[in-house]
Length: 370
Image 1: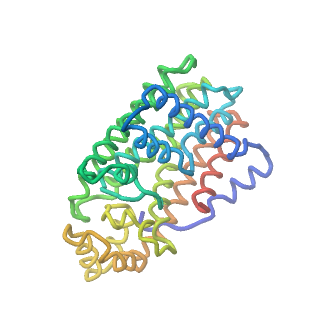
Image 2: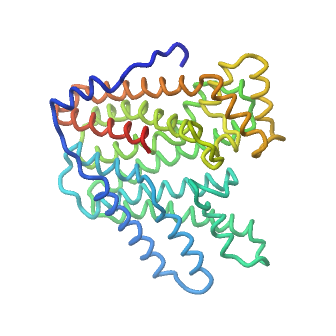
Image 3: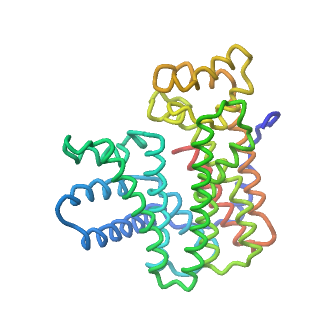
């Protein structure tokens, strides 16, 4: 990442799009369809299994899944269908989109359990929400964690059910592909856990980027677009090109997530990765750029005995002082440039190139404004 020069990655893309106008569906319309399908799937499950002690637990699950969210994965799938000209949007396709959101919810539940996080984006994590539904005699903390783990597994089952219960000809191929992405996500989580007990200098930039690719970026950007391409009947070569252009965009997505919690924010919940002492690209870049005294102080802040809020302000100040934020902003821009170039591949018809560029530009704008 060193030596990067910032440049306006969007100027040539915007001029190209200005000459080739394309209109994608309004996100709020698609988001409403996704939310309705999520609620329908949950309510169908609950009707068959309601009663007694599980009712209040179901309420916590429905509230967790139904919280206002970006819905970026199902939206990318539905937009991908438009980009790849898959035809009319059917209920089965909306179900696949809902399945991607259920998968994301499953990942969040398990991630919060691993990190022992009480909150998620300003709301209670599922295990913490379930804890409030239990009486004290239940050993609430452990019981709630066990319940959340099982509910997370149920969310994964719902994700797969949304696909395999559809009437799509490619449903079994879609389910198999999604399972492959889920395995990668699990291995990314394993790397994240393992790096938690490693020293900063022992983890390379390449290792962190691979962890990002497996844990987040593949199932966030690549997976929805590849599944949409499969539904649309794209060639294997075109699907491979979608994979190639999605990977830098996915890495940029995760980098922007890292930066969001730090830039201009005094909200400790927003800096949860710092609170958990995650070995992110931001921390690795800061470590490399600081002088020896500050580098030692940064390493000290990551000592297991210092976990918590006590040194968070020191840690934030060190990261900002290092210039790592600016470096990663430049790196994120260069990654989107790679994705834009990938979208201009002649393997795609010109109409598809235009639509892909518009979609990637929308993702980039969203990351900078949300």
